[in-house]
Length: 401
Image (cartoon, rainbow, N blue to C red; front, side, top):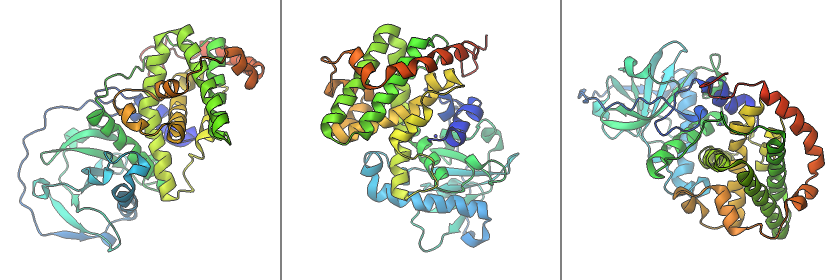
């Protein structure tokens, strides 16, 4: 979900406002519908010896399996470079559903332990270089159940198992959910990571009600000041400078919590913990893939790109920026706090961990403002506050008054 809002953010804001939400309420762009109905009794389908050659599949299906074959070995051999060893997408059961944009045509199931339970399944004969678990093409689709899913489902019932289901289409229909290149691979990993968050983190808090979020000029100016401090910390060329700029960020975030209450803690912190770490996964996996087409750029550039927009102020300030700011804080923790991921999984946010290790007790807000040209931020903040007044109060569509 990338530095240019036009790709991941598009689906995570535009079409993602209609993407279904998962039961624990991850942000609208990264959710699935709450189709958590009880898993129906599985009908046993007699397994056939029928198979299909990889080169018999069309280009879109080949691309989907190729992307997965590129990604799986990285999780198998370098999981610690992506997250921790407890996130192994290569061990998940993944159900890729091929659509033509109007209806679902067939699916590919990877790593299912009971292939005999899959309806009209054919074993896919993969090229010798593909390091994938067994793959089956499935023609027997539960169209009624699939119609309840927008683009993906974290816990989809299939063959007696709860699997990660994701729909894809040809590039001409929708490039974002088409398996064109590495961006699609990062999208798949991002969503599968949310599944891990729900399953293993005991994730319960994720405030996404933006109606009473403060969009005053002062709040927006402090948000931009936070961004500048984060970017400076990420670009710092020495541990001492990095420490100082992290303390600047901690100081400003603490001031925002003091001025604007727990909403900042519960919205900013929760979304950065959920979406920021999922975006961090994209960065790390993208580096291993050697992706040049991904629009992630660097952690610092991603924050700079999102900072101080001239439109969509509410969307950006109360949602969109958390992908980049959360990922950027995660990167700073990589550089400064060993073992931080385990603490985050237990409930801490990136900000809380940075504040614990880099308290800003001896730094004043005026010092931070002077260090980052706060005076140049204020004219933008005043304009942005006026724009925000004219925008829908709730970016997720609950209240457009």
